Length: 281
Ligand SMILES: Nc1ncnc2c1ncn2[C@@H]1O[C@H](COP(=O)(O)OP(=O)(O)O)[C@@H](O)[C@H]1O
Ligand SMILES: [Mg+2]
Image (tube, rainbow, N blue to C red; front, side, top):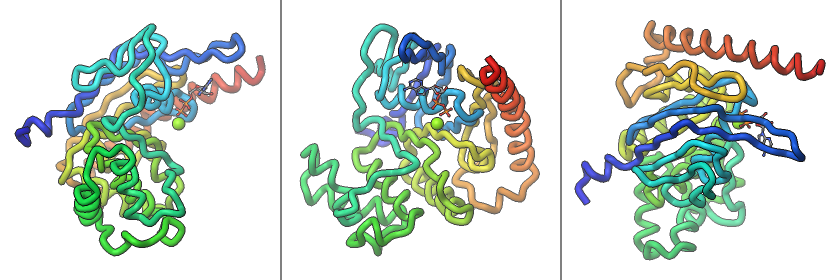
C-alpha cells in the first residue's frame, strides 16, 4: 500500500450519537446527539465536567457497549448504530486506560509482543523487530528485559502505548491515561506522545480533565456540555506539531487555555447545579 494511503486511515465519524443507560428501570442519558468528525491523524482532545459522559462516548467507539441511536464509523465502516450490536473491540481501535494493565510476570518486551503472538498475525521475528523499532521511537531501548514492577509509572504508560501501536491501529483511544502521574512526568509523556505521533500519525481520541494537557497535545479541543454530553465548543489549536514545552509560555497557548477554561467552567457550574438539585430531590 502507498504510504499516503496508509496515512489516510483513521477517519472517525461520530454522528448524532445517543447513549441512554437503563439500570433497574432508571434511565440515565449520558450522550445526547453528539457529532464529532475526526480526520485521519488528528489528535482530538475531549474535555468536560466529571460525569458528563466522556468515557461513555469513548467506550462506544471502542466497542465496549452499543449506542441507543446514532452512528459511529471508522473509515466508512459502521462500528455502532441504532438497534444493532456494535462491532467488537478490535485491533483497529486500541484503548489505553488510566490504570493500564501490563502483565507483571512478563518482561516489557514480552508484554509488547504478547498480542501479536497470541493472535498469530505476525511471525515472532517480525513482532520482536517491530517492538524494538517502536520502543526505540518511544525512547525505551534499555528496558526490554525489565519487569513492569521495576519501571516507573511514566515508563509503564509509554510501554502501554507501544503495545497499543503493535497492530498499527487506525485509532488510539486514551481515557485520562496520565491522570495519576506527577506533573513533570506528565510533561515528558506529552512530548514523547507527540514525537511518536510525528513518526506514526495515528488518529487519537483523548479524554482529559487537564486543560493544559488538552491545549498542549491537541489539534482540536472539543468541550462537552454537562451531562448528557454534547459538544458545546470546538476549538482548533493552531500551533505547529510536534510541540515542545517552549510553547507553554507563549501568548497563544495561554489564550487557548483561557478560552477552554471559560467554556468548561460554564458547563461545570451547570453540572454542579444539577447535582445539587438531584441531591435535594
Ligand atoms: N454502566 C453504566 N450504567 C449506568 N450508568 C452509567 C454507567 N456508566 C456510566 N454511567 C453514568 O453515565 C454518566 C456519564 O458517565 P461517564 O461516561 O463515566 O462520565 P465521564 O467520563 O465524563 O466522567 C454518569 O452519570 C454515570 O453515572
Ligand atoms: Mg471518565
